[in-house]
Image (cartoon, rainbow, N blue to C red; front, side):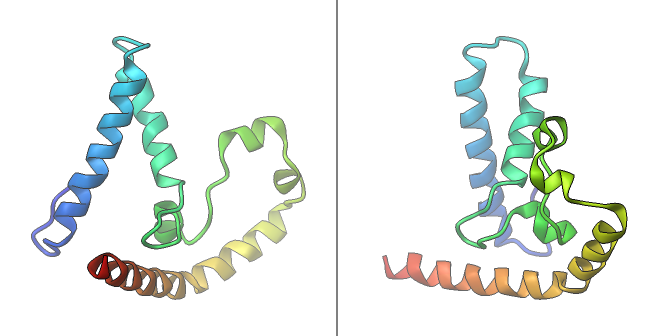
Length: 120
């Protein structure tokens, strides 16, 4: 997605889309005609994977929390089993209170990453 408000993001968007398209092409060689199902998997993977530039996942920067992957619910991991509704609500409230700090840290990481790239 391009934006007129923040044109610097346009190059990053194209780069990110290129990664998704290249991964889809590799995967679709084996599964002809099933790109719609595969796209959802790639988008989920992309949004829940930490990025080098920010040190955070795009999902956490938007929602302030880490995503629980569907496998953790089906297999019932310890992380999932130890949660109760009251404790979960408290943690969510705390995470929402610190989301601006998380985003500020991501901005600092991006600036440091850009400086490293410029030096290289």
